[in-house]
Image 1: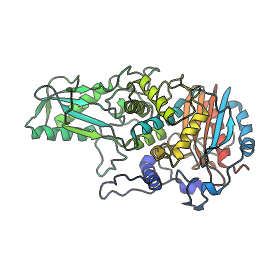
Image 2: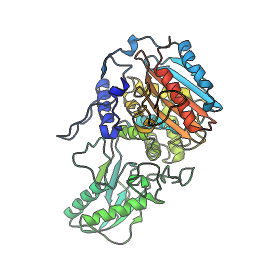
Image 3: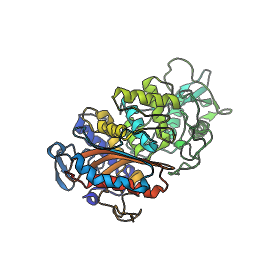
Image 4: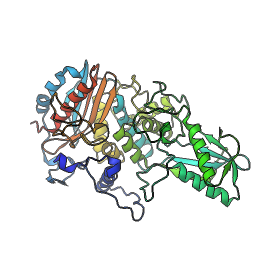
Length: 480
């Protein structure tokens, strides 16, 4: 069933996330603006995110509704997963939790209240906090305002982490397409010509963010300096998609690119492009572009484990919460939003939004409850946390995992395991740390949420394989 129902193309090429998001919206009674006229939206390419909760059909035919199927028993899950926790590849600290998404009941726990380094599973908490603070439809504006003097304009960063210097493709879906500096320059030039202005001075304003620009790990290809204005995540090669060298000053680079684009549109930029401040007070922008909705940013962050988006969303959560818009304020906002959701926060530490900070501490119980709320009909605003999870064996950071079965000889590039397409989970990897948290439809069609965390690992491939076997055991288990 997994092979038949999951397309090998990633979610951004297949339109999977857009289709799943709209399907979930129909379930939850949410209305969104439709696509531009004439733009066809593809159907979902993977099993519906909420298969275990919804009655109905999958691509393989009728599927039992979760509430109509008995949940696994604690003893059954212990028998299936307990021995797998003895794998030495899991390091010195190994913890886990499995909850029933239909009832919220803890079905299996292995030191589930013990806090340890979460690595990138931190992004589940960041996504939840941002969505709670601002709502899934929130969009981030990048604006051009009139400056203080004649012919002066100011490029104002709003913190859009997906702003690009590439043009927007014709007919692109605005719900799944980054905002473009090309569009902003063209609209700005049009507004200036309407004012009979063809020469300007340009400054750029990044004052929305406060505190250090560099993540505590320092200069690193995994993340750019965190600023309110950047294009293409500050990559020196905008076409790169993996970890890549970053610009030392992404804001200055984006502003210079914007000046070049204005020149192509017939507007001369005099003098040097410098940092500055927008005039005080409220001013109508000359032009602005809007990011994808927050729900789409969350999906992109989780699927690709994007650190730049994660730190930007922590700051967006800070803006919505009223805390300082910095690493410290973002972490504070995450804690405040999760407290409002009555999450189990004992022993937890938030120091950033991406999980790159090794001092972060989360528990499997917290991660599982975050996923539980994301699956709950009471929290439709959190649905993109589920739809953004990578699909085992097919998309994002799980594309090369759950391959060649679940045995010790599993290797990337082999045939998908029996759990491929059925497990959807956020990965986490730092040196000596491996984590996995997500959802799975078990052998009886019931939706479960899980979180497995390890620290002190010495072989990352072996640790990932052991985690995959744990998730696969839950997927293949009726366990009664």
